[in-house]
Image 1 (tube, helix red, strand yellow):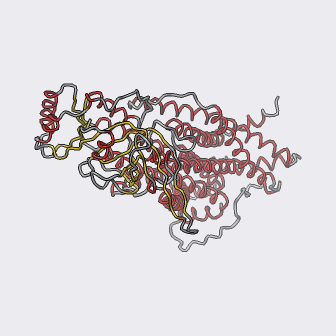
Image 2 (cartoon, one colour):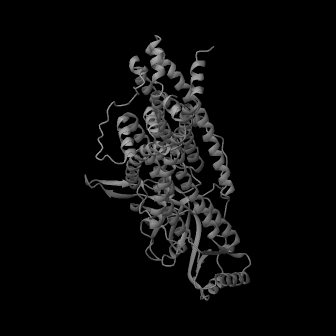
Image 3 (cartoon, one colour):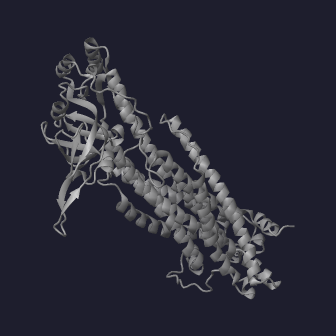
Length: 624
């Protein structure tokens, strides 16, 4: 028989304890691996920031959340590993006493239980890796089902190895301390039926009232079991911090970024352009949520320019409230250096370099534009100003201090435009520049726009007005189309919402692990109070009384952890949250609802051991 057969049989004999430990650690490993794989899939956060999805501005918003959540998941894994091993060893003290009584040295006992810890950690890491990969695969299929076209790339083998090794080491390092402490217990104490590891003999808690017996018993037991109580409060507090950051931050950031995106594209906006130009514009918008190769496209082709008859027809339609004419081109842009003064030394410093790249350039009439961008700085001042507003991706890639620099379009001899703002815009992944329409027309010598955006008066019959506009446009040139942008807007919003929903979903793994830890704590409490509960039942107490005492202990522990976790989580959320968050009454109610649901779910699951124990006969309770 192998040396590991005894530890394996011992673990199998204690199926519930072993299962709780393995499932808890498995969920921690799975959530961490899934988080890293998910970041790679969408190109943000911890492992990569890629082109062709989102924008640099959106990526920098997601990254703090993902990094902090990733760190918390690792911390939660370490805390859970330590607590679950503590719970297991607290219930094995009697076994250790018998082993010492037979002459086993501490080194042999330590090695025996370290073998059990090695088996549990190894099994948890393997199962966690498998579950994390399956969750990533399911997410890909869900994205594809939503029409967002996420490709299933080969799983990063080294990433899996990294997560496996880190959690394997965490499990052994943080689990060794409770084992070492337990093996140092004196044999006489370990065998004693009145000794429990981590139990204070007398409670320092004094009840102020003789009423409410169940509450007094619950509080006394919590104070007697200080070591285990402090550990479970730390464990649950860490999890609730994670849940608060993910839920509160996720809900607020989701609503705020969706608001930015909807204002940038425009709700109920109608695009009128040549059918090829329409296709190209939709492609530029869809690059926000799926990586697409952009085929060569000649924006300056005369067939794409808007006929004067169509513009006159739109101007004569009273149901149209706003007409936004635009000229969209692709241009080679150049960074222009500038100078600034160091406030501490007074020296003149050069700002910027001579970087260059390609971007979409859009000429707009500042006073007539339908879009409202989230800006650092301000938007274009007037229609003839030598100004530009650049997208967030361009600002990050090509400029050192955009608002202190200038930009040139097309060639080195063109006029320098002052950068007055940086906007978050989904078009072409934020690789876009806005300039006054007349300024752009004078640079490229093109007198007509190549696209028009309109907004219909809400009081008008939208269907009838659209039919009339389509008929008028088709009568002038059948190659020009009238297209509502709501469909592509909804896909962009759907992708953004999916990301935030996934971020909010991640703590569920850790919350499930915390629930299992609380169940382990309840089992430890029941084992320590078994004789006490038996006496209560023998004196006429009903099974409900036992459940009430244990439920009171669980609720007090949960409430303390909840208060600490929510308070710290809200502070951290406000520190890392995006600028100018959008918070409404509905937002607050949604956050409160999710956090309350997490508290109630954890509490309800913790009652299972108490209900099962209370149903046992009195003799079995006192003499197991």
